[in-house]
Length: 332
Image (cartoon, rainbow, N blue to C red):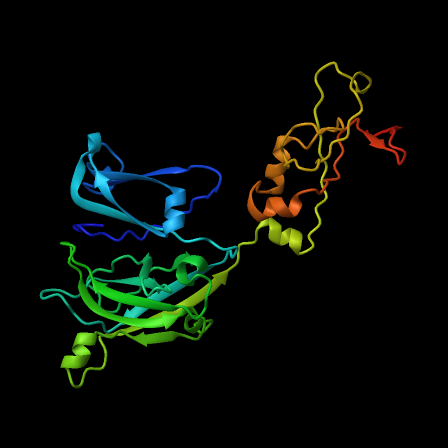
């Protein structure tokens, strides 16, 4: 954010939350001297704040003062961190917007418009979802397509209201308001194929003052594509079957007769790729197996796979007979 003492950052990042652990976070704010210097020692440190993930999750909205080095307050500067739980929906949507005949806010040139999308929460607060790039000197801009998760856009609720605002960019940070409109993701979904959805970009002040006021331009949704990212659990619940072969390399000079008979299996209570033995002398799957299968050792996937066995046998392993003894036949 350039030339702005009250920035609203549009970057959203995800953090895994573990209830039983204390997860410390630190936020630092810097005054950047240009794109080339971002993250370097040339940037001026404006203040930092420390908290835990548990505090943010419990309060949903945390506001704390910024501190300079040695615990000194950074004036009256504060930072606000918002959090929300991500549901199991892994989908995201790709949107492409353009505008036509926007109001000209500049005296010697045309407006430099950009678009912001806000999600309206249940408590009527607004959360910035996405901010487009600035299109210079253009009253009919075409913004680059962008992707955003359905959780961030509408909390996976098609009828949740969205507020879209068009601004004229100002290098001093005091952007000029062009207009706004309200919509829902349900309405956006009408923009498929050759169909386009458009909204009048309205300036409430002009609507009251000007008798013949129609709009401050038109914003058009050119295309909408919904993508679904399937997780490993989705494949399991959908009936996907996996067949695989696991090979275990024995130490040099150690033949099958010198090793005790063992079966490679996933014992109850152990995770895929744990690489340990269970109480019955059976060896669990080697560590790379969990990575190959793409199994996450946390959350719902771990619960779904708990207590199940992976029917994999290594070279030289012996099968157990029904009587509980080892069969004589080995796998080659």
